[in-house]
Amino acid sequence: MKGMLFDVDGVIVDVKNSYHYAIKRTAEEFLGIEIPIEEVRRIKFSKGINNDWLATLEVIKEYGGKAELHQVVEKFNQAYRLLRDKEELILDHEFFKRIKALGYPLGIITGRPREDIEYTFERFGLFEYFDFILDDEFISTSELKKPHPFALHLCIESMNLSGCVYVGDSKADWEMVMYYKKMYEKPAEYIHFGKNVNIDGVKTAHTPKELILALQEALMHL
Image 1 (tube, rainbow, N blue to C red):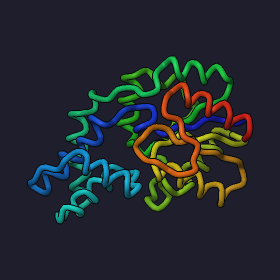
Image 2: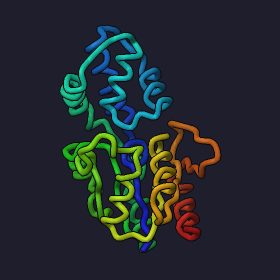
Image 3: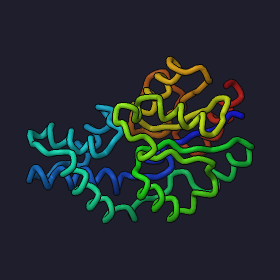
Image 4: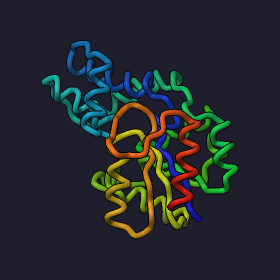
């Protein structure tokens, strides 16, 4: 059985007013200066940083500051929890009802901590659509986290899939699928969703309607 797998941030959930501003506020606290939100997004996406704690460290570093990861994690989590109710759905219930009706299992691969994914999915009522959710805490070794393909391999095997299509919005998402195809035998394809990053030569969908069509086409040829 083939399956459809999704990233969360920037694909299912709009995090422009939550995670992005949590990076900004945390970095500003360490630097003591104001940072334009556009610069925060440029650093995160141009460098292909999947983890927002590490993205925060990179912003601090780029502006000449220093911080330890454990310090950033504590401040970032505090900032994010004040902002998380600003999140909105990009892919809504109607979207998931339509693709669920196609008969394929659905899964999640996300770098979100478990508490964050549980809060968000409870808030939006999304759990009913997904057969498997792989969050950040499934993989404890940092070297095996996205863009390493182990997360994709683990999700595919846990769901007993014969192959999959993965929907992401970042360079790290695309790299994970490309590395997977070099290291593992089961077929996997990538669909890029949204406008955060442009990846030349990659199948891209800009709207939920385009994404449904792209998923159907990819699954037919998988």
